Image (tube, rainbow, N blue to C red; front, side, top):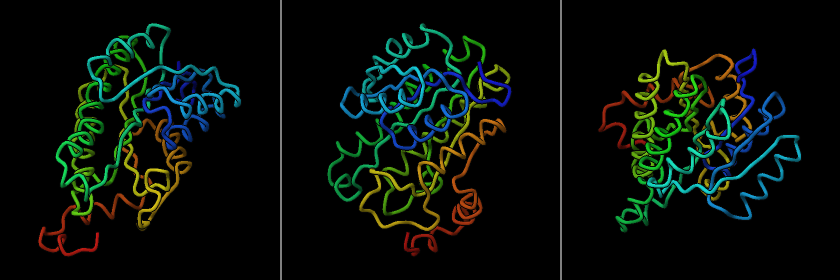
Length: 251
């Protein structure tokens, strides 16, 4: 169960090698979290991440999970929940893709969509059902400001995040009053391995800053979290720009 401050004692991370997810796990372990499941494709990176979290004093287990294998999600994730209640699920997997390449290769573009949206819908619904069955818990979904309005530079990724964001909001409404809390997190440009080599955007942030915002959002039982907070006003302005004007912006 969560503590008096709304922080989880048990955590399931979908996307167990995500730098944002691991920064969040470290922050929560420093507060109250004692049991962590890292779900991801088996790899030395997943094992290393588990070892690092164990070094912080948490009981950590790994589970083989593939966003691109929705048929296995119910069985795989069901076994995690069968081990005991999960206070928080952090849906943190995703892929940026390569916009220029993916425009020329529809199969690659579909893989981005299947990972970021279809896989998330499947895993999100499985976890939401399990949380509802236990009567409590939070589902935290890492979205992106890229989903607020599709940009020429990354509209394949942005469109997949737009779908994820809309799904998570609707799921939150569907679960309202059940004891399950859904929180959508919309970071801007985050300095991670995934964005290495890309031109840095204004208001760039770090995994640790996103983790701090997630913790605060949990304490406040927020439904939407922007990181940094100033992006809320920036994206509101961009979202309402006429399309002809938006098209000419260097974004």
